[in-house]
Every structure is written in C-alpha cells, then in structure tokens.
Length: 195
Length: 367
Image 1: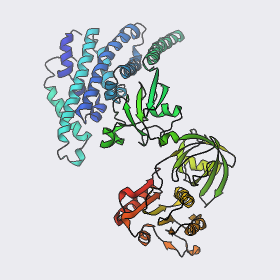
Image 2: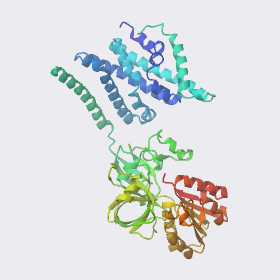
Image 3: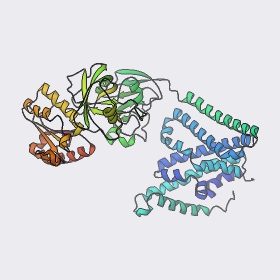
Image 4: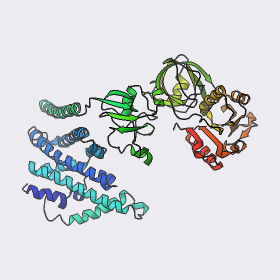
C-alpha cells in the first residue's frame, strides 16, 4: 500500500485511532482509566510493546510464515511472539529500572492480552505495510491508544465528583463517553484514507 | 502430506523453542541477584540468595515473621520495618498500611523482594519463634467436637512462651488434601511446662487442619509447628480483668489462669464462657477450682440454647447482658477475648458501650 509512513503515523494517532475507530483494546481501557497516573503508565507500556511487536511480527511474518507457507497460523504465532516479548521486557525492566517496573508492574502482563496490540499486527498484514510503515503504524497506534485512555481518565476524574445515575455508573458512562469521543474523531477520518 | 505437516510442526517448534530459550537465558542473566545481606536490627547479618521475598528469605534462615496467609499478600500480618533497600512501595502493599505505617517505613515482608542488601527492624520476640518437631503425647475428648491435644517437644525440646500466645500447626498432605497448610492455635497449658504444651482444637466442618486433627491424628504421630507468636498476653497492671471466650477460645484463658496461679495475683477477675447447650461445656469443674485459688475470681458459664432435657438452671442467652454483674469500674477494667470475629465484634461493642476503654480490650483474631 502506497502511503507515506509518516502520514500513516499521524493518521493512526488522530484520524483512524485504533481504539476510537476500531474499538480495540477496550477491556484494559475501561478498567484502568480511573486515574490519570496509572492510565499513563499503561499507555506508555502499550506504546512500547505495540511498536516493537509490530516490528518483530513483521519480520516473523515475512521471513518465516510466508516462505514456509504457514500464514494460516499467524494468529497463534503473533500472540506467542507478543507474549514472549512482554515477558522479556518484564524481566529486563525489573532488573534495570525497578521504579518503572513497579509503576507498570501489574499492567505489563495485561498487555499480552490487549487486542489493540494483536490488532496492529493483523492490520499490518491485511493492509500489506512495509517494514517502516508497520513500525510507524505500531508506534502511532500505541500513542493513539495512550491519548484515548488519558482523555477518558481525565474526563472520568472529573465525573467522579458529579452525581451520576446509578444505572450509568462505572463502565456504562465510560462507554457513552467513549462513543462521543469516537463520534468526534470520525470527523477527522476523511483526511487520510488508510483502510 | 505427512512431510508437510512434519515440516510445519518442526518450524513452529523451532520458533517457539527459540523464543523460550531467549526468555530462559534472559531470566538467568537478569534475574540473578547474587548474594545479598539482610541486616536485622543493626545487629545480625544474614547472607541470602537474592530474588526471593523477604519473608521466605528470612524463613530459610529460621526467622519466622508471623504470616497467616502464607505469603500471598492477603492477610497483611507480616509487617516489618525496612529501613534501607526495600525498593519502592508496591500497589499490593498499600491497602494494608495506614498513614502512620507508611511514614514509618513499614512494609509487607511477603511482597518486598530481596534484590540488594537491605536493613530491617523486627521485634526481638520474633527471634524466639522457632520451628519445632513434636510428637502427640495425649488426645482427650473435651466435648463432642472439641479435643485437647498434648504435644511433647522433640527438637528443640523446650519452648519459651507467654501465656496467651499461639503456635502454628502444619498439616501434612492427607487423604484428598494435596497441600500442606498451617493454622494458628493458642497454647492452653502453662508456660512453666517447657517440654510439652497443649492445644484445644474444635472441629470446623470441612476445615483442612481441624479435620486432620479430629479424624487422622493419633497418639505417637510426629508433627511440625512454629511459634510462639502473638501479643495476646496479660498486661502487668492492677486493673480488673474480664475474660470472654467460648468454645476452643478457652485455650489461651486456661493458660493465663494457670500461669497466674503459679505467679500469684490479687487482681479481680471473671471468666464468661459462652456455649450453646450443656454438652458444649467442658473443664467446668476445673474452672470452678480457680475460685479457691484466687482471692476474687468468678466463672460464668452461659448457655444460649439449652435443651429441655438438660434442665439448665444457670444463665441463659448471650454473655453480654451478664457483664454488668461483674464490671464495677469500667475505666479500670481490662478485657481479654478469644473467639470468632462475629463474637469478638459484638463483645467489643458491648464493652465499649459500658465504658471499657478500647485500648484495654485485647484479643487474637484468627480470621
């Protein structure tokens, strides 16, 4: 697909945000967005893992799966590569930056099952991105996810002090807020066509 | 076809093998913390292999910080002061620590990992906690569901404890029980008996440890214990004492009374024992005998639901309404309680309502 990698980078943050346009990575988005601080921690971890796992999965896909005709196994292979990479990151961070490890602590293992990360790898295959495009798409999607969860966390922190009808408290209101944010972001979607 | 399948399996296995190898090697390189020193109270130094939790590192060196849940971070009893090297406070510890503890460097020792040399402060009593091997010397049936078990210590062969403290009994794997667990029981015998002690254990339906004790344990069996733990012991004051304990909660009270009998006391004391029916009463004569020993002691057995045939003529209902018979000067009364969390809760409320200062109420909670 012929699209400038840098255009793709910005497009994946703003105009086709993986969370707001594809609704991927919802579970941790809803459960962790109670506080800005922890949202930032998780967002940064998603950004990092989605960037590197896009690169790794691109290499695995093009140099192992395609030549050996194993493309039909891409789901399993991608998930395992992501899981292994998260494990590795965890081990290394724990050793060299305990503070970062403890602030990400519980979120890192959660990322293994974050569908936004797997989504990035699958879109990159479906849309036939080059290596550079894939890495920037991964980085952009990670940043986009970070931005979306930070926005929701900011709104939720303000909503916390307001009276919310019982039936809407918690995930209910968060989903409505996310829907409105998604509507707002649809306005940008015509600027760049990445699909 | 077969070759194609074999080839694909081989490639996948190779890929996953490489990933696993990378993780294993990374673990070997990065999760190896070498030897670390733990400095305790600026006096003792221990060298341990890094990477384990503080609780298990200390246990390896035979220092047992009390922990009711066994290091899962769910009970919050294994607190200790970590002055240097504990790393940042973890989200798993926060819920168990109040503002005063946070400011005082108190941490949960099961969550703190030993990754560098660290210094900690623990109460001296903990050094007294040891692991014991014992053999069962006697089993008596006190009631239909309460047994008194006497343990004779083998190794080490003597124990030093304060009346009211408890030990943790470790169960072996038995029947369908695949895991060894440890449970806390108060010692019911007097501290001056150094070579043996008694526990009073009530059967809990489906309880892992109590089922083992009641159905499987025989005289002559060998068991493992750790102890003594706890700060449930009589404070050295002149205040009146009210004991409230039902069922197997009689254990620490019996130990306290036997200890006071040897040491002598002129404090005013009374023991309220709550039970359901007459068949739940035990050691009644033994308790009555203490009236002759002490200047001013009374024993109040109270039954909540005696049957018709039993012809119970004593006090009926809950124990709480009868406290007023004994308590004369609530401000100058100490309460020692042992029992279920629900019983502790309602007795505490009643005592506070009567004017007993909250700081004077002592209890063990084994929930």
